[in-house]
Image (cartoon, rainbow, N blue to C red; front, side, top):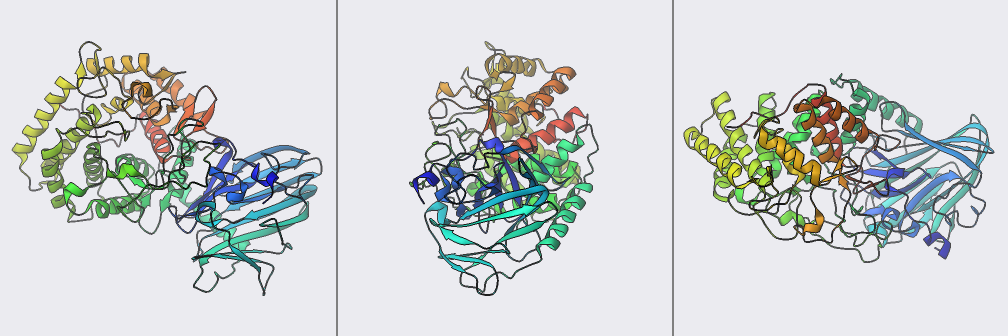
Length: 621
């Protein structure tokens, strides 16, 4: 690639949209460039990695041509035509089919992007439709496997128009009626599209040692994929005040699911920074146990029993084995080894380095995951999803192990890398694990040492209230004996440890409002206190802000709850997606995107503000 192509940089995070097929997902920029794609699975190496670097790390542009399209079409940050007037995007109804409308002085053209859900091998279809006038178009395909480090061998297809690209285990075919040619390490084409005309580009992946993936009818795939999404959304049982917003979040969660195993990943991306230009860059293409309960609540609130059961089954398989080997996260197949490394050739999103592949936090001790697992299995059992007869003996062993370790320091919900502490939230979630075990044994007549568990539960509650609450601050604190605050304490009413109106909870909310609010949104904690062992600075944390809206409602502060919830909804991008955090100063979404935890918290807050409840709460003594 020449110097001008390397000048292309990724767009603001909020300028991307998501498409997927329950195997993997791609991010499509509003400029018509697909800048992130891992094939064939969410956690596979990326073949489009421009999101973490430049165009020569892999991307696929399809947009109105620039004046220099015949040269590079990559010498600006937007890559769209100089005479482009407006760019608008939407998902077609309640689907994950993206429609980007480019309106230019020549006319208007729409690009439809989607990943077919019924193909044997993963594919992306890009359909170009002329709406008015006649528009000059340009496409540039830059395939770079292994996170931008491997250039494939590209040849013309013999039996049809298109190209084949092979590198190591990967084979990718681009089929189209448009003539293609090679240029500066890319495959490019220039063509015109007039009103009423349409043409398609189909990019398919397959293992290089097997026959090429067969062609398919792109028009039929569009119809089938649209019908699948619309039918799925129409099944949504939630009919509250925020139905469109909840459905969009549920569609996003469904897109982040891996159909083969039932897993749901935290995000389809890695290393999108929590602070622009910073080092808080993590790989989120895995499954965190802490998402378990919120995921079940969201899916069951939507009436999606099949997906909830699949997630529960994945959870059973992931934690099966010795209780002392339970991890905080797993791969989408239940894999346990998620080694962290950095590809030195990727400069990072807009210079935010290092880029991280894998996640070293997998080896941390986080006591809260026991509460998440027990809470999720309790919720599943109460709603008739407990289909695994082996579940209860495993849970009994988990409680026995937790009893031995709950008083140890851990790394906490936020996966700090600054040393273990007695985090209050971790202790509360340990209490929740025992509380859920007691209630299941009582309600379902399951064999258990009930008297011993009840005494343990009460002892844990007393210790936490004594050591986790600061009388000086009139607040629960981040860790025992520390004056620092932590937004995870907003979950106290949600998990049933104390009611939202308890004076200690009211004091905690007041302290968080004083110390952790920025422009009305919630920070996780003060990063400058050094608890996480990282350089200070990050955005406000969107799930925590949704939790605050929920606690406002539970405290009877209805107007404040609705105002905060609506302000959070306004942070979604133009197609309804949220990242993990928000930078109030830059007014930008930051962190991995789209983030399941944020969308789970959105659904949970909507249920709370509607006065609905699928929560696990039963307020403790």
